[in-house]
Length: 321
Image (tube, one colour):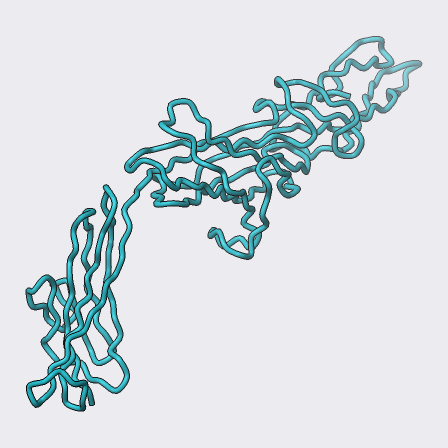
């Protein structure tokens, strides 16, 4: 049986009328629901009022196959080797359905095609790709979704060896397991409760695109120490001052953002107050308007955006106890 449509019922009087008209909406009656209808006519005969009922008609609501896919990333995701794109997949049909999920890197206009590593379903619902998530092969079947239910899908993409500063699009396609086709395509007997399944307005498939911007910049930290003992030498004895220098080497052809350097004060030493410096310029120990802060437990310096080829350095002193 296809989607519900007007059914003309004969009353006892011989007139015909529409018994029921049920519009097909994804958010409407659940697939497999039985709708029944009986017409009634009243009349007078022999001076008495009489009624008569028609036969009862029953309809099983067919399953409407519809889906909506949307990117959950508000901006292109930065990648220096691997990136995770986040999508939502929503069953907008009126019956439970699973969807085949396929990520496609070959989107028209891409300067290069990255590699799809894997897909994952956010099984624990925390919105973050982690070890608790269900891994899917690209083109694998996602979980069964009730009507109007959604699932978060992660697409993990490899952009290693890609040019710097390029933006690429990745498409995620969801297709109803039952089948896809032009709206109105009928899949006989494959709907919920044994009725038919019918492709809805989406054609039972949908896709959305997420974006990745590549960066080939990387950071390496080089740490060195110079010792000045109380006797004018360089022996690490109690009372000696150790000056640590940390160089942040940014390589590649782009830049890194929100670069922060931190270090703990080693055991058996004490931080020498007022010794923190950035590129030879002193920083206050307090957490204030400048880039650094220091305490008995450690130091931290905010370097911000640093371009490739720049090598900012942080220094501070400790005293061996």
